[in-house]
Amino acid sequence: MNISKSVFSLILITILIPPSYQDPKDESCLTNLFNSFQDPNNNLRNWTKPSFSNPCSDFNSNLLGATCNNGRIYKLSLQNLSLYGAISPYISNCTNLQSLDISNNFITGPIPDTIQNLVNLAVLNLSENHLSGPIPTSLALCFYLNVIDVHSNDLNGTIPPQLGSLVRLSSFDVSNNKLSGVIPASLENRTGNLARFNVSSFVGNKDLYGYPLGPMKSSKGLSILAIVGIGLGSGLLSLVISFTVVCVWLRAAEHKTAVAEQQGKISLPDY
Ligand SMILES: *[C@@H]1O[C@H](CO)[C@@H](O)[C@H](O)[C@H]1NC(C)=O
Ligand SMILES: *[C@@H]1O[C@H](CO)[C@@H](O)[C@H](O)[C@H]1NC(C)=O
Ligand SMILES: *[C@@H]1O[C@H](CO)[C@@H](O)[C@H](O)[C@H]1NC(C)=O
Ligand SMILES: *[C@@H]1O[C@H](CO)[C@@H](O)[C@H](O)[C@H]1NC(C)=O
Ligand SMILES: *[C@@H]1O[C@H](CO)[C@@H](O)[C@H](O)[C@H]1NC(C)=O
Ligand SMILES: *[C@@H]1O[C@H](CO)[C@@H](O)[C@H](O)[C@H]1NC(C)=O
Ligand SMILES: *[C@@H]1O[C@H](CO)[C@@H](O)[C@H](O)[C@H]1NC(C)=O
Image (cartoon, rainbow, N blue to C red; front, side, top):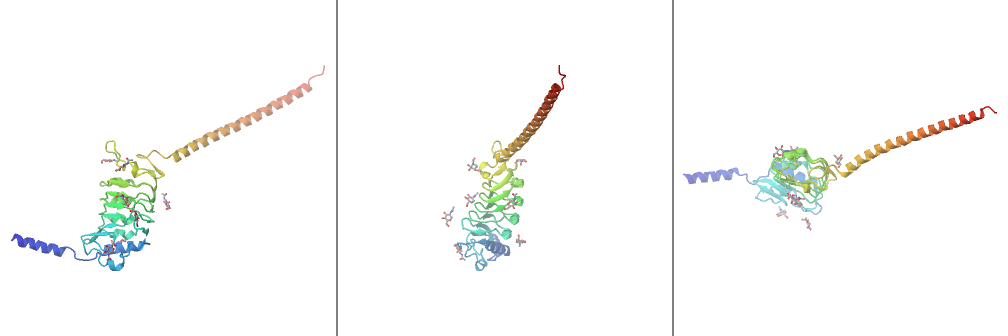
């Protein structure tokens, strides 16, 4: 009885596990990604349409850098492949993606906002590229994120405070970008005396300030000094000018008096 039951469940499981079948979302994701990348070293040579026919027929994909789980792409490891081009917004069609690593390439353009649809994403490593534009605020919607590593890019704008709400975030590195503004309190949240993320996560951004970095940058401090200097300088200048005016006026008055005195002398009666 028990045996036939377990045999039955085994048959049921076998039927339920999707056989070698290509998920249309994954296909869209990979095709668009392949088209948005430039691959001078031809590392992705087997990322062509025929190989797409079934990237997840096995537990492992036959595509370089792609790993499957349950018939879906769940990991893309494309680090150090000399890839150029941009990240296609269709990356969001890889809805089962848990780990995305495109680090150490020459990728340009923005981090696509559509990345927010990767609701299973736990690891995001886009470090050491030439990505520009902002860190998308919507990244905070990827609830399972453990790792955000975007160090050494050209990202600008401020760090979205919403990222501080990612409760699983254990690794965060935005160092060596062009970020500005104050480091959100939500990311510097301290446990006892320890910062949530230390100075290493934030260094190398010229206009970023606040704990655990220093206060507002010296360039800003200097410009405040300059403003004070200009204020004091112009005050002093107007003082000098009014002093000179008064002096000239006094001298003129003195001269007038002297002339008058002289004239008086002349007009004195002769004895
Ligand atoms: C694609 O390339 C990878 C790595 O070079 C290789 O392991 C895989 O077998 C190739 N797949 C096909 C379909 O050629
Ligand atoms: C990147 O790949 C090149 C070969 O393509 C290799 O020489 C280099 O050591 C790799 N760099 C890293 C950091 O893995
Ligand atoms: C695929 O991604 C595009 C661009 O983000 C989106 O418009 C489209 O709805 C997605 N398709 C599916 C099936 O998720
Ligand atoms: C991200 O990728 C870079 C370069 O490949 C690597 O050095 C770094 O350790 C990775 N970050 C994490 C958190 O694994
Ligand atoms: C970020 O850089 C882009 C050009 O890459 C520029 O258009 C934009 O104004 C910059 N944004 C900020 C906040 O500096
Ligand atoms: C710091 O963390 C605590 C609990 O983890 C939370 O209640 C508090 O709101 C956080 N403070 C900030 C500034 O995010
Ligand atoms: C920052 O923390 C990381 C681990 O999270 C550690 O490896 C690194 O040495 C720390 N850096 C500093 C300057 O404390």
